[in-house]
Length: 102
Image: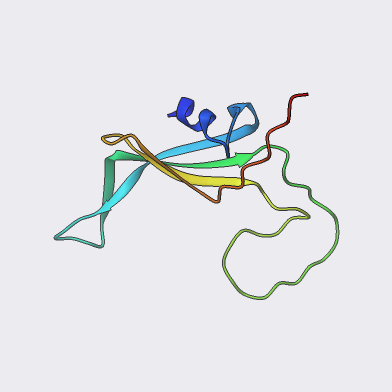
């Protein structure tokens, strides 16, 4: 899985990413309020190291969902890998332009 992520244009070298993995979840048919692990799906949440700066001061925000803001956004990527098919899905992909060779 990590080799596939390292080849993805939004990720690249894994040396600068915090990587979190867990199995996917599947709803039960007879007890839908209880989820159980889907062992065919691995979900991931990656956070780019060094993308958060904390600055002093006060801020007041309206209600809503999402992460608490910092002076610049946390660069994060979420996705999943389906083991049986090999399908890799990546969300919040913002590929950085590759350096040109001269």
